[in-house]
Image (tube, rainbow, N blue to C red; front, side, top):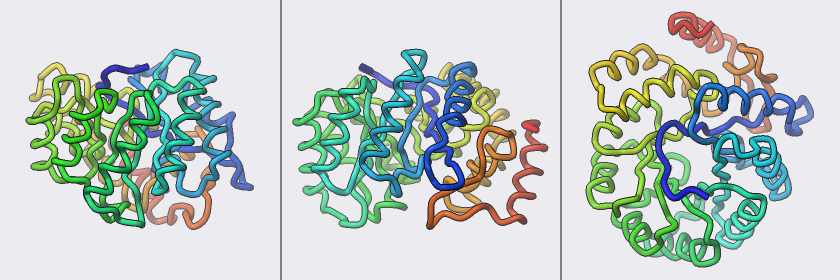
Length: 295
């Protein structure tokens, strides 16, 4: 189990067959690619993994497969969050049973709890499960920001809440958490394009989309940031910057899965309501990949 987290953590896509079932053969290839390129950890069943359209049993299957296939070669942080506290506890317990190193817990979506409700939700999970836990604040998907004070209160109350994935794009809020958080608590950028400024402010890394298909290039940039060579890091950052932005030319994970398909890692199959990339956007991404030297 993890006691701290840092570096580049890949939010894995879930490759799918044409019938929408998980494509485990392709998932193996993507996991292997992360391992050989030095990624620090992987996250199955996060937002990028299309977890919102998976059943409980499917999430269990994918989490278990990922842990067993990784076989200790890379830490596995299972996405077990839910808008339903009971369901989040049940899936977190399953992930711990399977041997996950930590879990990633998205803030409840759709039902928009108050800050008191968020504290009650995450406290219930922390009290029911001893596995290391990472908060995930992504108001663009949940319609509710988890405020800095809320995250700090949880970090202080539960030592096994070891980090937050901050995808609010609110740099001031992230800095507030970094400044006031407990010593061993990690703030991880939730947006690839903000990883450099967050690490420069004291963040410990990023949970990344781009590292699915560019683990070495992106991971090297993060490592340069972490060692404090920001002149070189800026150069590397801007070499990848256009692609970071284009990862969201359509809703995530459509572009990243489209890119992985172009590179031969998986087929471009999604679950409804996700749709394949527009052909015009595919051409834009191909050009950006060429410009970045990735194809």
